[in-house]
Amino acid sequence: MKMNIMALILFEKLKGLFCMEKYSRIDFVNYTSVVCILLLFFLGGCEVCDCEKEKDLFPAVKVAEKDQKEMVLIPSGEFIMGTDMVDTEGTHKKIGAVKPLFLDQHPEIKLFLGSFYMDRYEVTNEEYQKFLKATQFTDLPAHWVEGEYPADQGLHPITQVTWWEAWSYCIWAGKQLPTEAQWEKSARGAEGLPYPWGKEFVKGKANLGIDGDRKTAAVTAYPEDVSPFKIYGMSGNVMEWTQDWYLPYPGNPKPDARFGKELKVLRGNGFQKAGHYFLPAYRFAFTRTEANPNDFFENVGFRCASEIINEKANL
Image 1 (tube, rainbow, N blue to C red):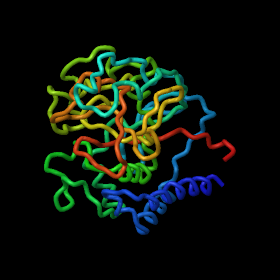
Image 2 (cartoon, one colour):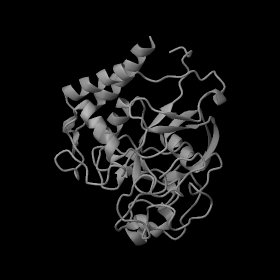
Image 3 (cartoon, rainbow, N blue to C red):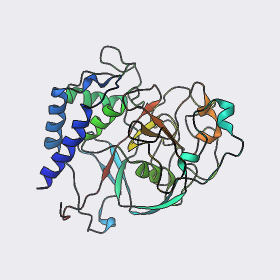
Image 4 (spheres, rainbow, N blue to C red):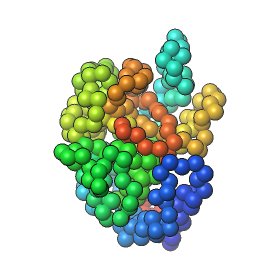
């Protein structure tokens, strides 16, 4: 019964792929790819767990079976999400940004999340190549040459992948893209820190801004860019795709024409070569950025999450 429900959910998600009218690299979604993903889903299993057990019975760290990535347990409980900060100086007008600062991150709210696992590091070129070989996907990141990632960048985060490709990797690995809430809790901790490492921004802790590398770095290159849950790279290196559409938070009264189910949310900051993302306002761990799920960028990657699901729930 449970597998039938999960299959139906997956089918509905895949069905939406065929309804896209605008695309940039959507051509990879064809009948073969869909069959491949469905087969991978059933062969790989959905990795469900029993949530009625005490949370301390779950290992604090586990290694995912399919992609062998280390995952960290984020325990259930409340956390602070969003902010009530306001830009009284209209900074976005001075820098030519589309939207006012902070308003789409209102209001600051306290949420409860059940336990889940989060990849400790972003998915790397090396790991993504294994996924491509296993699934025989033919669409490659734009900066790869003849199916190979740049030399000496095996441990750098994968970039130039669409939301759909990131989602496909997570499904193959028996996981999912993190929700915004999962991502933010993993980055800020239960207390809602403004930066993963604490309350004050410190130059050099993360690969971002003028003091960063201005290109990707190995996922282990910035050991101080670490959250209270020991999740790395959530402040810099690359922005990360999340599962969610760009929608207002509950209680946000600000209308925005960009809200809806056309854009996906990116979280975190990444290396930058130029532009307004250098500004302090974009360094906060509650910052959200929106992008077309069919587009890909040189400073956007992803990591996966894995929820603990109650096996005894009546599905």
